Length: 287
Image (cartoon, rainbow, N blue to C red):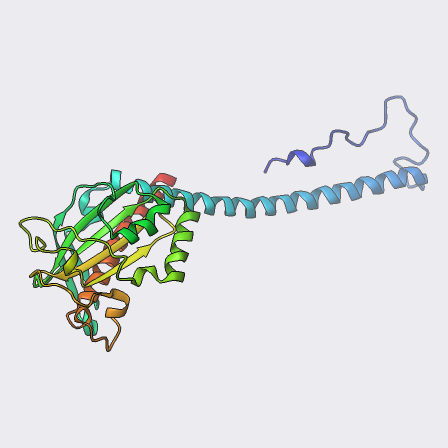
């Protein structure tokens, strides 16, 4: 390890000058003068101090290097999360099929198949007005959406990834606000479905929304959400957030029909695929 600049002496300890007589006893067993002894003692102490300083500096450098490396990795992860919509294929963000082991009512397995993918777009009209207002502080760089149907095509679920313009601090502030104010559970702050024509979701409109989930991440600039309804177009009179609809003993239509499980399961499966891809991209970018 190179010697740090602050350990380099600009004034090294001087040797004896040429032609200067050697003091009596130098190089022999005779007792040295007090001045010469003090000089040697001073040199020894200085060497000891410098040696300890170098060791301490190396240890501190190692610790600081580790912290800097961790911060750098987090920054790369965040950047890759914001850029993934440009670089990843559709199937990597919205897999054609999702499987949720134990994700259904009573721990039953669930599967969902993708039936439509929306063109990437801005966020206009994608959320109820109050939800759009709540999300406004982090901005909208891009919105990605897809709709899935369960194995029996009884329910349909739109899942979305809002790629924001915010930094990690702003995402953290948004996450805290949603948690503190319970914004993810308010019925007047719902995401809207993607009702693709000529699919089982063609009749999936605002009135059919029965359950939903919203999740804000802070390690990537992404807000994930899912909203679920019946595929036959029936209206939902008592919409319930997924976190409550999956609670044992819940009696809402969303809970009894497993729509809360669909919203939660699809959102989490898409999130898992997205984060896995971002981590892999970050690792490759760091090599």
